[in-house]
Length: 344
Image (cartoon, rainbow, N blue to C red; front, side, top):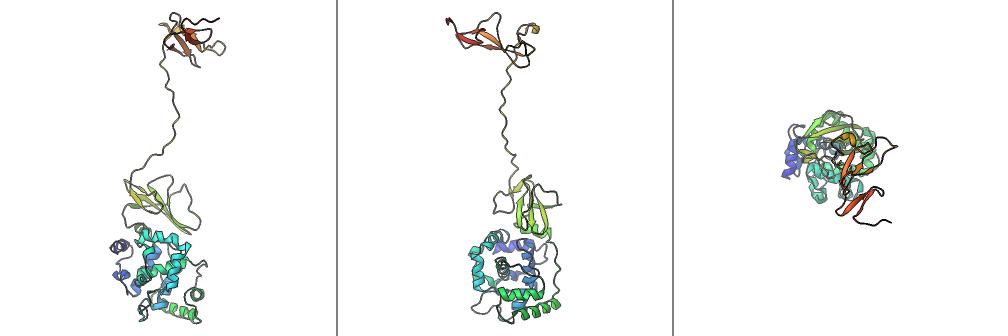
């Protein structure tokens, strides 16, 4: 819990004071609910909920102030997430990918979370967001349409659409809804891991593309010190690791880690050292190697030493070489042969 509090304190730089009651069982009030819903939005993990989570908290429990919110035997919290919905989160393949990211960003291992933990406002709000992620039907805009959605997936009661509409309108008069706006780069930055190992960059031309409609962290394939936060239909955010940090190669760690850039390893062609050029004579004009294709012979006998020969290259340079011990050069065969070999 202390680690989660430390994380929330960092996010408080973008959202003023952090209500301590977001992690305390039984917390309530509009400031708590608004902080939790803003935190969920700023995490950049979930699709835009179109004010639904904010309305749901007020419709269900009047932001936790209703006396039945924390009733005996029921642990759904401010958002009133029933136990079957809580269980659906853990069994859903859709939310399983988000659970790992929730642990990275909020330091909450959802695999160990119990239904009773939803008495803490942050846990109840996250459960509502995770439950929404398991629903394949798109969340509609507008209070009327969301009322029908609420009845279908949250409270299957004939009065649900009317109640959702009535209390949502009441909420609008008491707490004006925040207009939809792009996620703050600073809050997304802090949400990465509660670290200061990042800088926000001005958008630049990427050498790769964000997956269509996805919300995901992507390493810059051309620079190990940079990474991008893809945000579905919203503009991507660009980050730069601080000196001596690189973006983690672990797909479950969306952050910069200590390390220096490793240059790419490329296969180098084998280079045969050029042999030392030995002059044929003191007078270099005596080079035996031909200067044209017509007269070029690539091997020549040494004029005074039968244990040596000249090897010519393709441009007419001569290289003096030795026969193996005991061998003599035979120009007619263009090779070194054993001394005394009888050639018939």
